[in-house]
Amino acid sequence: MFFTYKPTVVAKEYSSQRVTIRSVGATDAKILCEYFVRNKAFLKPWDPIRDDAFYTIVGWKYKITRLAELEKLRQGLYLLILNAEQTRVLGIITFSNIVGYPFHCCNLGYSLDEEEQGQGLMYHSLIKACEFAFSTYKLHRIQASYLPHNLRSAQVLRRLGFVKEGVAKDYLLIDGRWQDHVLSSLTNHQWKAACKD
Image 1 (cartoon, rainbow, N blue to C red):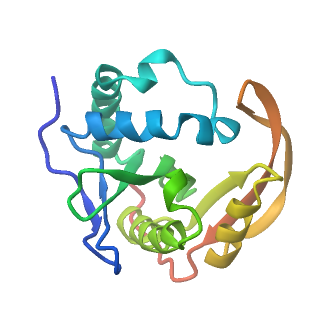
Image 2: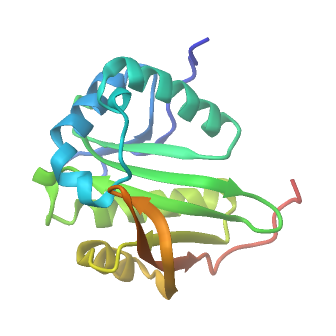
Image 3: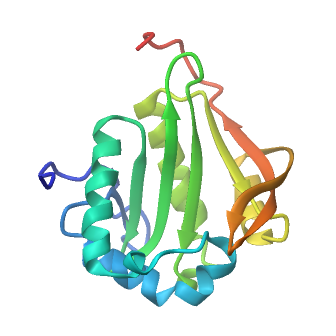
C-alpha cells in the first residue's frame, strides 16, 4: 500500500532562490530519478554502487514507500532541496539510523546537483535541516563522515560546527571499494532531557 500523508516541510522558500526543503512525497519518483540520472557520473566517486533500479521511476516509487515508512517510525528522514516550483531536485539531505534514548543521535548524508555547486546552497540547507532534526527528533548529536579527499564536504561540515573525531579505516564501501572516512559530529548544546521513549 502506498502512503498518503503529506510530506514534512522543513523550510519553505527560505532563500533568495526560493528553495524549499521537505521530506519525500508520493509523487516525487520522477524528479528523484531525474536528479540521480543527471548526476550519475558526478556522484559516482562519492556514492556506493547503485543497482539499475535506482535510476528508474519504478525503482524510486518502491524506495519512496520504504523511506516514508522510516519517517513514520521516526527512524529516518529523507529530505529534498527543491526549486521554487518543486519540479526539480537540487539536492538531498538524509538523516538515517535515528536512535532515541539514551543515544539521541543519527547519521547525516547529503548530495548536491553538479550545477548547484559553489553557491552556498548546501551549507544554508544543512543549517535548516540540522536545526529541524535537533528540535523535532530531540537529538543530542548528529554524526557525519566524509572521504578524506572530499574537501568540499570537509569545509561545509567545519563551517556548520562539526568537530573532527578521527579517521575510520575501510569504513564504507564507496564506488566499489572499502574507503577510509573522516568521522565528525555536531552536538546540540541546547539539548534538554526528553522523555525516555
